[in-house]
Length: 122
Length: 186
Image 1 (cartoon, rainbow over the protein chains, first blue to last red):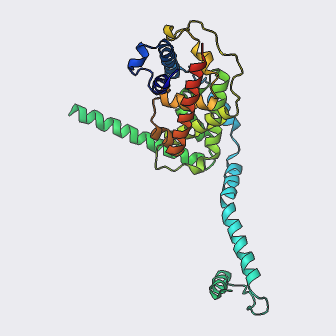
Image 2 (cartoon, rainbow over the protein chains, first blue to last red):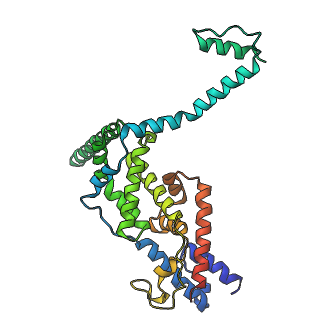
């Protein structure tokens, strides 16, 4: 197999119906072209030809996890990064602030207090 | 006038259809299993047709279709109504089929002998089906989308949610393996 054969086969793998002069004079590449065409036909025609039966829909609905549970689990999963970020921010704040110099934590308007503390810097 | 009337009628019915589908999706999101069951009935043929591309046996196709709908149900919250529901479901189905194929090892069969193909190119003098079972299932998957469905790299990327570069790399590798296989065949 020479360089021309390799180039021809690369092209034939992409486009099996391509008309390439080299194929006419090279029996090995002609065989390769025939196999490439057959493979392309297989990809085009391959299908199991299976149709859904009448019991398919009910069998799917019977397998569905309960709606509320699924929604709650999904919501919890989606909120996990936010929860982690908040916990980290609070941990950082408590680590950075000196316990003696800070005002007592207010029981009301906690968010304003946190922003205020963050604004003061280390 | 007749054409305009027909067009108006079909547009009206497709709008109605989309409205009904949106209602079913919203009900499904609220946990209504029977509304989701109606969505299953609407789309089951399409999902079977797509899954039938990648699997041979009835059981495999049914399992893939079932898994598609169960995943669709659990991830219904991620569906954005900016695109039709069937596009989103196609993506779920393709990814589900791909994941199932990835779990499968390639067939451990000897290379086929030189025998006439059944219903295929008689010049090839090879059982193509058996030959292609030596490809990795994931390579067959990408080649079935490219050569079987006739989708472009951009279409595959969009429908699977992959990057175009990813599709190109996988397609290139799959074609290279296919070439080696076709060369190795007697």
